[in-house]
Length: 353
Image 1: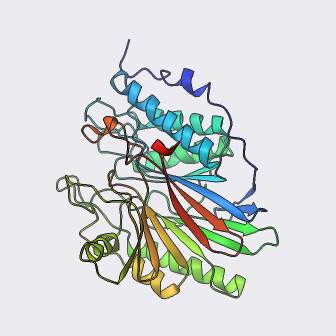
Image 2 (image 1 turned 90 degrees about the vertical axis):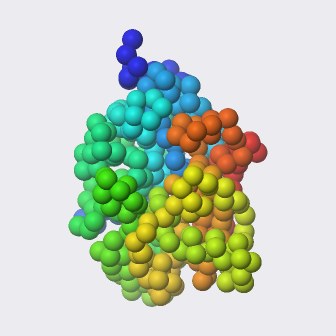
């Protein structure tokens, strides 16, 4: 039997039961590529999952199953209205399991989410379309589009802004009276500046300009500054700045929860190239928080210059050596978006379920 057996996880997935949650009214605007979610309760709950890292071979089967079981437990416990996966859903690299088929892995996870019945969205991570993967970034983007056309649960835009990236999108959460409760920006932090140095890329200026223009357009429509959140994979440089200020016990940062225990590549693994995104967000006064993944042992949440910078708890059972046997870093992040535009953030460690 081939180590790349395509149906190995399906017996488990076919037993996954639907999460019993209230359904929101979701519509899609073909002209703009924007999904609008109408929320009728006081709290609209988002569950951030990150760095799931499915392998997809015989060698990774037990760890892949554990990753999906962990996701299912978190979803069943949190009862979210929306799941946002902030990158590195797959791990198409030789690594420990000789896994390259990101195409099958994306389809596998889509089948899993379909069984849960919870709508979901995704940003790309640096590992999702590695150089030897079956699908490159553009091809993977087309696969997500194809899945979204057939599966109403995946909120992936069929039309995207003509800017740098494999997918950049905005999802509106509106109250029943039509007012905007929260705008969710999912931005591509790309992968590497080149395949030789493997240095991490950054959010480019055209992406920042699109974000700015979109916020200003929403402000004009609403007659006030809208509230928004940004989801990315690789942390922006301000995560590092805020953490260093926290370590130095400076008053410029406010600590909320979590720890940063990343060691191998530095405490905060961000791009060496600065992005203008944070300064633009601060100038606009719309974005209340950033949510990233990427650093599997980091899950700290700090406020810096009035904006929350939160690491999601990772799922990874595969990539980091020995991580399958460690539990304290594994879990999800709950983001409750209130009717009045306020946001409450809390960790959901898997060990608490």
